[in-house]
Image (spheres, rainbow, N blue to C red):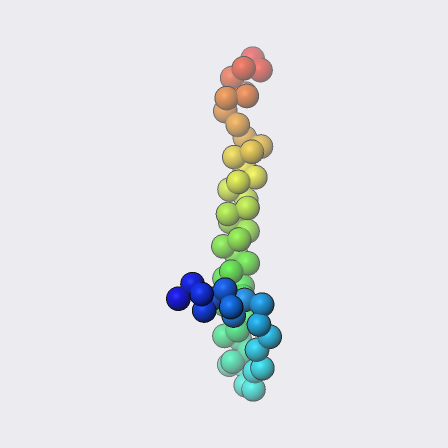
Length: 57
């Protein structure tokens, strides 16, 4: 399953109908959103570090 997903990420798909286009874009949008949420969580943990706040007082 993961192998098919990773092979399809960089692949350019030919779409023939509007429904196919929306389905393809929706899949890419979900991947972008998941990547953003992971990056945001990591950035938030980096910026808000409770150990450094306590030692600064």
